Length: 329
Image 1 (cartoon, rainbow, N blue to C red):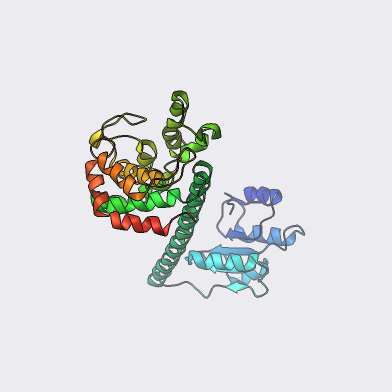
Image 2 (image 1 turned 90 degrees about the vertical axis):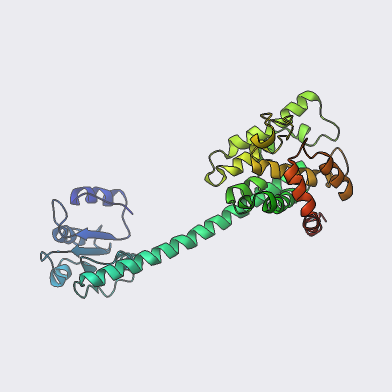
């Protein structure tokens, strides 16, 4: 939709780009809407453009609107959606029968119309937001699966760790389980690996010290890549940056320790380690569940937050079920 301050400006806009429909106010500045409508309808280049004439005064009526060729005539105040419907109908070529407003409405009636229209617009906006959020989630999942396939040669890692972490969070920090930002962080935790060379990412043997340093940059790269994404602000970015920190302070990238590590990252560290140990990697085969369990319990208070490890023991049956449900074929 384009808007002009007066008839002269509108004339220039119409020359630049012929509109589907034109809405004119009778009391517009400079040349009034009635005379401008007559000019437009009298020109071969603009006479077929539908015109809606608006008035809130006695300067024009239905007869005058008809004489100057207006396709629709509306009295102020009117419902915004009513005007939109008329314009859409005219722009679609359905203006064989001119629209005529039936008369001015009482103030209370007009308020009810505005309230109805506002409610309708809010419902439309909520529906569009739900569609957008659904599309966003699908895009995030597809991106994470593509990255998993590049890194681990499967597309299920992000799904499993997301489910593991959500299960653990319900025990140690229930609010995290319902935090959308954190959920996206769980799924996109390794997005920074996009910037890691395949020669390092898919190396079948142990990494050298320089290679390990390059690999460790993926946490900071991921945070930088996602820093402009509104839905990841807060807990989501904390997961991406800090999921390789250790409870004893020997992790990366910041060497944070204990409760200085964001809770979402502490939860995710256990989930990520569980899936890493029980999945095949280019440099080793998968460990059995019992071996992974033993390793996680042994690292309580060292690599992992003891409270999160306790949550692991409490929810181990549910975690095993998630593993069976999402097992790689």
